[in-house]
Image (cartoon, rainbow, N blue to C red; front, side, top):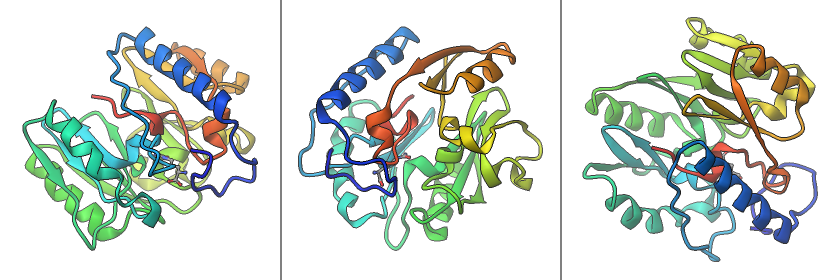
Length: 240
Ligand code: CIR
């Protein structure tokens, strides 16, 4: 993973520290009541720890994505057999569509799909058609300031987003409650809401308070080594 893609000028990750943080992340998920299946490392793909980008898992079926970064293109091959153990219905994004799972944000029964440097309109349209076929709905949101949609906004409670930068005032989110982040706290936008708790990246005490003020139970998880590769909390797992 030390050879993973990055735009962050934070230096290379410390691999030993990353392994410890990954174990702590798994423990945090388990403490929220989840059962966690940890896959074998895939040394051929340095970014494969960011497994969220390879698939979208829904209550009605799974979708294998088509990651845009050339070095990540083969990651989905190893995911299919794993998903086959859990899902009867598995759809797939196909060329020329590209889509990274980090661009897909579920809010209730609706999915927002970020149009980003990684997810193109064709990929988004394919996903909208698939989700509509699953009996769910989806729509697009432009993403210009962050790698993925969920780098800048995540759903932390029912119909409620924690959002940063240009995503705070997007008209697509006008029906939702937005908890805005100050610019210097933007790194906290990628949270995971699980079973009544919110996993928050460590190091953002103000945001911790902001979430606590909403009555949310917060659990901090340090993922500093993954942030060096532009990764956040959601990227490290597929949750269903
Ligand atoms: C990449 O550039 O693809 C990885 N270094 C980071 C992926 C982060 N994934 C995510 O936000 N879902």
